[in-house]
Image (cartoon, rainbow, N blue to C red):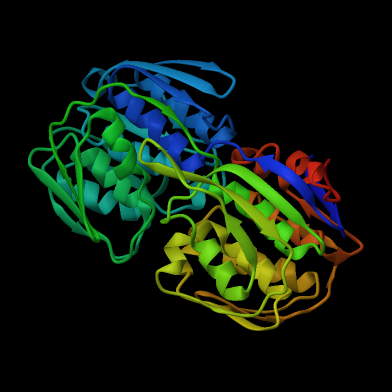
Length: 434
């Protein structure tokens, strides 16, 4: 039987908290550490299932991995020493790990098969396959959209200029990782700015990536060296604490050590437009990534339009925007977010169905929602469809709903924020994991 999150109306969240290491950065540090020569030290690594699957994968490819809690040590002789596996690399539910590894193995002269769980097997990999094929790799998958299992036969790659049809940091990063191993220059042109962790982290490993507006260029044949890094707290995990504090009356919550990379913090811009009161502490830099402290106060919200550059900057937080909009005065419209339909679940449909069951006035559109508020929510049984961000967003909705909200399929939370319920409860929220 799966696990459940149980949430009920809460009053006055107070105190301070930290959140686990950034999931996106943890994946990238693991893969780059395995591509580099020497021993990489990664502190505050996210010890959740998605990132542990990536550690398993790089170990299978030939790196030595030692983990001591949230400290990870990766020893490798570089990507040229990677070996062909026997069997299949199982990435579980990790779309990020699978897509980035597609790019990393594309330049290796052997065949690699990447697979995942039932949810991951529904997620298309054709957007990664197209540029990798253009570079000279052979990529096969299931059906027209190339769902997993996906097989990559790597080898000699050549640099290309690739114009992305849709902004995607995962696709961009896969092409950059392949481009490191290619002959010549590889350039990715983005339609909108997506998260840039790969470009920033590369410098710590001695890699050279040039960025000019929406254009990212990498020279092939680069050799990487080991690095020592501390990974900031995951903004996408902090987002659930932020939303809870904004929504629950009388709240004041401080979150320390949060990554504040501007390609990730679109939610802060959306909340500012909605009227939320959030104070950002002095920014620090550890490596190239900005960190900071956020103090969040309960706030009266108003409806807004969310579109354009805000979409890639807040793509993982849009389910929370839907929850926030149910308690905002007026109409909130989220559009140009069709990418949500190919996440761990169809997040547009899943959030609309569940919030409607809780009493929200929400209309599903092809690429987002139209939500009118404020509307009183009522606790009921809802289904997360094995999607970690949906599960946590619905639990946050439960904190302002009458009665008890039971989120089925909540075990998925373990892929990114295993301590979610405990952290929120420590601030005074009425939430628990069963």
